[in-house]
Length: 216
Ligand SMILES: *Cc1c(COP(=O)(O)O)cnc(C)c1O
Image (cartoon, rainbow, N blue to C red):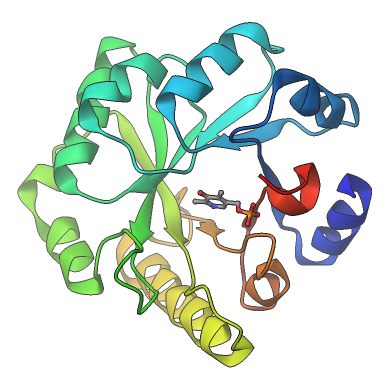
């Protein structure tokens, strides 16, 4: 399955985050030995022991909701946090990154789905954050792009519209705010059920779990 997914990503130049939440180390090692290095987890308490017991060259991506009191456990090693949904959280990531003497790459999670259950910043909240002096004071986070989850739906048109509006927001921020030469380059969208649409709409990072590891 890994090989097939990688072949599908290739023409788009997108990368795979293998979402290993709830899966045991053996399942991760199986994919690792086939060459995969980026793994995604949604819980700090699950990522930390996996980081400690699995190969050091795995790049751990946090994709789930993050509580500010747990950042300290992943700050020394996390490769990318996809799920930043408030300035408060970003300030705490910045503080913990400074303590570790590093810069932590982050994506801003945008609420694109109509469903209430999905987390993320609204476009208004995002723009307010980007204009705030507190945001500009941060020195130990690197904002590398946006993440979003589409509505869980059978309607491919709805999913496409949501991904497309996120890409448009991404491009307008790239052109008018961060700049093309900045590290603001990643658009994390697409999961097992909708990654084909996400790729067509410009995703650079797809987060795939069940298709790769089997149902949870
Ligand atoms: C679980 C999860 C995924 C992967 O979902 P699958 O449908 O198993 O591919 C992707 N993104 C986030 C944020 C997740 O929590």
